[in-house]
Image 1 (cartoon, helix red, strand yellow):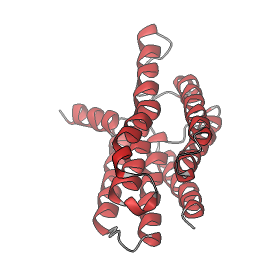
Image 2: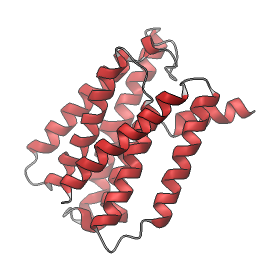
Image 3: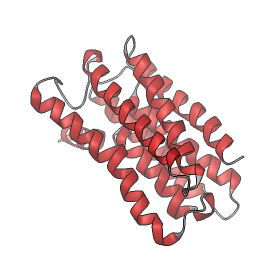
Length: 206
């Protein structure tokens, strides 16, 4: 039962979910963070979720069904290179498409650009070390809450920050329980994700 719960948490709070959570914060929770009209936000958010979560996830499942990927949990280092590289390509293309849409607030492509940079670095690291992608994403989510709280006085970050920290603790715990990572891989992933995204988001909303 406990292992089943850990597997569910690991899948539900996977790294591909984090960009949607960050954009959800910027578009809906802190509307001052972008200049996107309210009437367009739902459609834009759906498109971003499709390109950063749904399509990459379908690709990962396809790799699993084809036998290219041993497990969607990617516990072994050798299982991570191809899905991470493919995901990086999807994200880079999405950043480019957002950049090309001059009618959109530049904040959009910049947010995804910071997230994409973290994924590309994570992918490069993956070729020789297994830094936790889950915790990199959680570090980025915590950074987004902190930066938005510092930059926008209308946003009260206490409860969102507590929620993000609790989720990060939960995810880190289940990844250790599943023996998917060693503690150092968890800590480095969290710190890396937080620092990169804190600096990147701080630059965006300077």
